[in-house]
Length: 379
Image 1 (tube, rainbow, N blue to C red):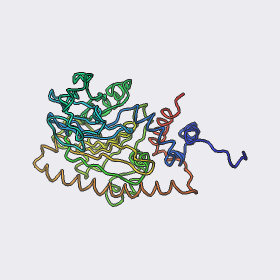
Image 2 (cartoon, rainbow, N blue to C red; image 1 turned 120 degrees about the vertical axis):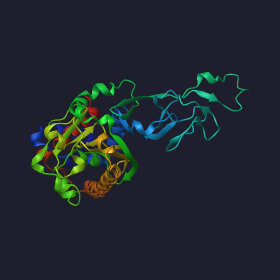
Image 3 (cartoon, rainbow, N blue to C red; image 1 turned 180 degrees about the vertical axis):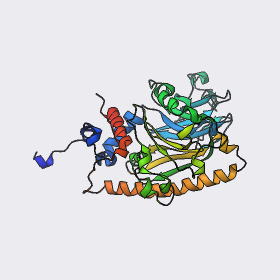
Image 4 (tube, one colour; image 1 turned 90 degrees about the horizontal axis):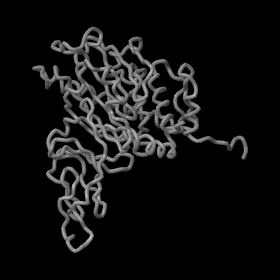
């Protein structure tokens, strides 16, 4: 083999990338975004092992409320059972293995669309037509496999990994960081799903750094975002974060006059929280919005997108106007972000693409690369 033919895996390229200290760091190698082998490693080592955010718990408020998703190739349903417990379980029938529920909604029971095997909301088999002649069949021995499900600060978190540490333990530092915001009391006012033509990590990294705001978002929030007021501290093992001081004239991003919990400069502080692997939360004293990302191949990303308002703005007499204002703003921001992130992925696919050095405002991106390396290349 000649020198020119020697290649290294994208996993090894990532390890080389993060071996440098942050002060010398470059963006992740393009193979990390474009390699099917790297995606396979992410699905097995990241999305099958860490916690994934389904959305807000209040979206499944009533018994029988459910939503469905695919996590690392596994069909999963998340629902609220008759006892009021949030539950995640396999979305595959135990008979001939059809998927069961689709989309989101409310149901009294889980009925297979193929042969009408029927399950209670807790996953136990209730009935199975025409099975009396099978001597080995025992209805009581059937129950849909259960998936770990925890509620944390109003978020529904699920994991395929029975040994994952509890969310509250992993994210205790996040809880302490934003305790005065009371995120668990924010009310979701919208939820949507989208697919964009970019790698999931491109969109995650776009969220993690605010270096791009003045340019990419010049038509929306860019004018309220000053590079000199952005702070990017080193990340933690399970998350990274940074914050921005928003202009006092940006009413929705500042604490409501009736909010007495948040003091001083924090009343105009926006936290951008990246909970690994892919829950991205913008939290202001007035509103929040979030993305929960899952890869759909190397070049597409499934996006769970939602947001809402702090209790003080929900209860404000002008609440409806606030809702409409923040949703209109976020829709415009999304259009800008989609354009930027799809351009980045198109550029990554070029033979001439090469990663450049990171700004001090991209510290979270470096921490994200280190997190991925720890999962993909465990010591």
